[in-house]
Length: 114
Ligand code: 5GP
Ligand code: ZN
Image (cartoon, rainbow, N blue to C red; front, side, top):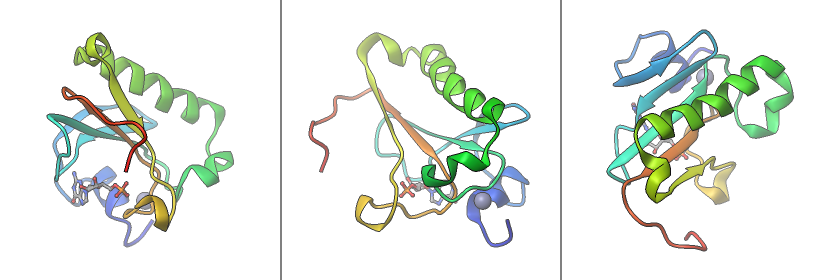
């Protein structure tokens, strides 16, 4: 989608530190990390948030969720625990309108979140 920051990252018009990619999913480092490990997992197809998940195929959804688990395991995050977050809408602090799951790890986290 034109003028979408994460679509530009998918299309390599904007540089990012890519950690993993396949036909459906891109994983890259968050530019302003909030934890020692802070990755973003996105579908390559543009949808604005989880509220449009019906616009992804079953395969695309599957790949996204399996990728979260695969990357967390590869980075050893599953040993101590980690957090997966998808901020949705203004009051949750969503700042980029392309679905993304934050993977945060290598520190402890409070509950409930702020
Ligand atoms: P949100 O605030 O929508 O939940 O998450 C958006 C995330 O994108 C933020 O954590 C922010 O640090 C990250 N971000 C913003 N601009 C860029 C960028 O140009 N490159 C990368 N890699 N991450 C970005
Ligand atoms: Zn997009």
